Image (cartoon, rainbow, N blue to C red):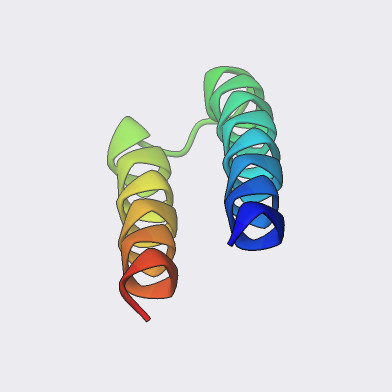
Length: 53
């Protein structure tokens, strides 16, 4: 159980790092912010799915 918890924490760290990268890219690109939101929503959904299993 602890191992599973540690994996989730690690996953959350990776996701937040990804979101930061996406935010930087979104700021420097001409793409609308909605694209960033779609990606982060998708990541959050995947995380929820993973934690529900």
